[in-house]
Length: 386
Image 1 (cartoon, rainbow, N blue to C red):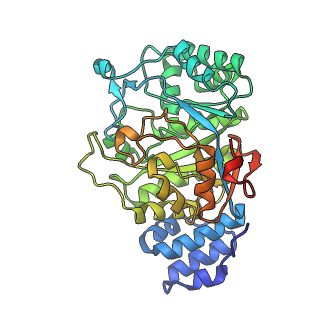
Image 2 (image 1 turned 45 degrees about the vertical axis):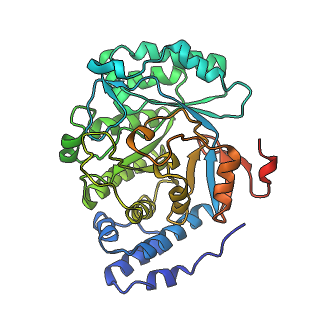
């Protein structure tokens, strides 16, 4: 089910810009591009040229394979001690009557509702609630593992973990070891936002900084755990901030090799303190994915989070370097629907995900969290999919 791969030399030659041609030649030789090369791609690369080159890299790494998984989300609370300007989701602790707070028993009820269903992952993230401490979440991790040992638990951003560890008077290394022993299998990529300290001061001043975020992921990797990485783009940052963010991730990946995938997250401006900031265009979204694929040469996968982009735009990213569109999700995640995402009920069946991938002539492959291949759906009819 392979598409015809474009001639890479013809792709590079399709631009008249000498700088871009030199960068393109580096990429064809599998040489690392520099910080300034990354900025140049954003500033000068046409969408069609970037897309063609990113697609070539994607097909070099994965052919037509496009991954998804069967997962569901638990959001323990949207009550949060932090007040990020871009957030439409959280409610400050002082105004918590507008939010929700789930007990361990309530969250286990959600887990048990998937008994007998072929989900492979539970994704747990939420606000930073002062009463949901480290011991509370250790109890939850142990309860999930006791009930369903095979379910992969991907949970807690460094924002949540940093707060938990500090309150529990644990070092990052101690906290990560205890969480891992309790059942935490891997980390999601959230909370990274933009690493640049000046941008961070303006949009999320009171949460863990870039060094703290990277420290927690490094500690997870050193325990043999894998993690994901994100970047919030399309607000007040510029291209250099984006490349700086990806450069820090690339350097940590050189050191540990622990990142699975990079997920650019589009800023949404509904009902938050940055509602005056216009959202990025679809053209800019696709440029972001393409440059990410070209710059992050040591990241195996680039993911488009379809509940944030919308189904059709997520489908479009598969021509701009993306080889993963996340999972079935179920309708339990509210983080992006509350921010104005096109997906107000973010749930897709396996058959719908497979159809979405096949419509653009890609090869749908169900994966586990760590990209072990579970089933290739290339030759499976939609009627056969449960």
